[in-house]
Image (tube, rainbow, N blue to C red; front, top):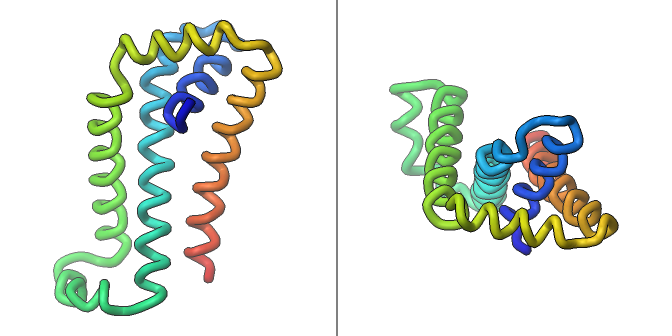
Length: 136
């Protein structure tokens, strides 16, 4: 299983355990994957810019049109939308989602918890890595 599968399974388990419809796990998994991948890309870009200012010299003129916060929000939103659409039309099909969930249901409870734990580790790892970069 890959990262998007972990999020599908994690969200499915969370929804089913609370008595809600497990079909919403597809959308939730796609959104979580998109946000985490965006955080990963932004972390890498930040680290590259921290290593050298060459990347940001072409962005100096852009700041005259909008503040840094507005630019960051716009870039983040565009990346999340791009990843969401990319995932939706590649790994996010309805048939693929059902195949992953059927495989997940066939696993032992220990393996199911392990997959859910991997999703949490990846999600919080993405958030923590970005936070560390911000506060460096």
